[in-house]
Length: 468
Image (cartoon, rainbow, N blue to C red; front, side, top):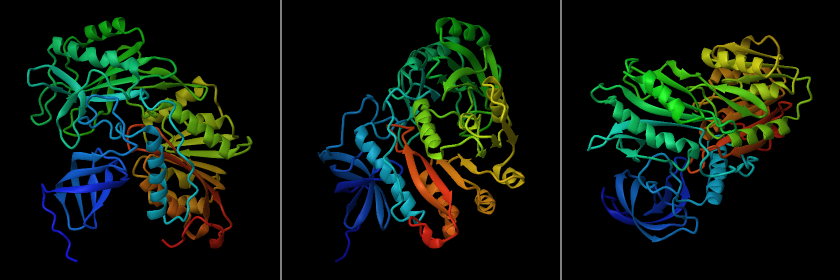
């Protein structure tokens, strides 16, 4: 039977059966796959084809013929336009099911693991109002008003927001009012096409447990007339605001923050309590956006490791010591490895602040520092960026052979890739994978994989195919 030739712009009927790892609904029509944003498994819909390939296509929801039982009304009035969230139209219980499936599928398809031991997703305490940090691009409306928000899905059109249902609600007044102050000051908004203007982004941050806030303007240069006066006004207006900073980004880039930040008023950091410790967090510090879920995942890690106090532990990609310091309290000696000098500086300060003296931090690339450790740690914690571990890190771990590895990942595709290499020839066995929901209303999922050193017996790893 000859397949129908799809045409761009054509309308087809699709039954959505799954969700992709980018959050789009996935259906089939004419024996081909169709990816459709804003749909839910169980939806039957008329879809307009917007991008056509021989074996698949991308479509746009045109008409919902039969809604999925998992479909709900979004909490946000611009959820169908704003690119900040993908899944506000999906009920939360099903979001968790979809994220667990995403982890399982990545480990099976990319990692080659058979029936990987993936637990149900560690649910968020609240699916809304959780983000402790938001960074908004700024723009100008057609009538000249300053706008802040997120870009429309699939475009560079800014969707103006005065509140955001996924950020901590205590930040909403700042989002609504700071735009007006910028407008009244006459500060020019940056135009990335012309490389003109001053202010590029508005950054807001809050300590979920302390309530302390930071406000940061990302600027093209330091020459922002009247910023000192305005910063003092903001500190007076918002009692929980402890610091106002400028971050300079003069590059023609999509990166939000530049390399230099100056505190204009107040202090350059907020205090946050995490896992019973006090941390200093700066405007550009990496810190998990869902504080409570990060604490819950740490509890799982501590429980699974069952540390006895005699272990040597290495935390690779340690950042400011968010995992290093709580774990250091349960081992003989901990070492944190981190490529960013500023993060290591903060980690050392946080260790001193909490009276933890059995931890050291080293600045440098993990792939260069790990082979020079001198001693073999019993436990290695990996928490790399989205791109995963450098291959040299995997090779070094297979040579060092620590008895246990915990791999915390924010991208399950690279997690699966790296676990496949670690488990090659049965050297390591996955005992548990615990996904956690750090980003409700989106397709992103965090996961912690627990590995133990086996006896190099290929048959001892019942979860992995050993062919690479």
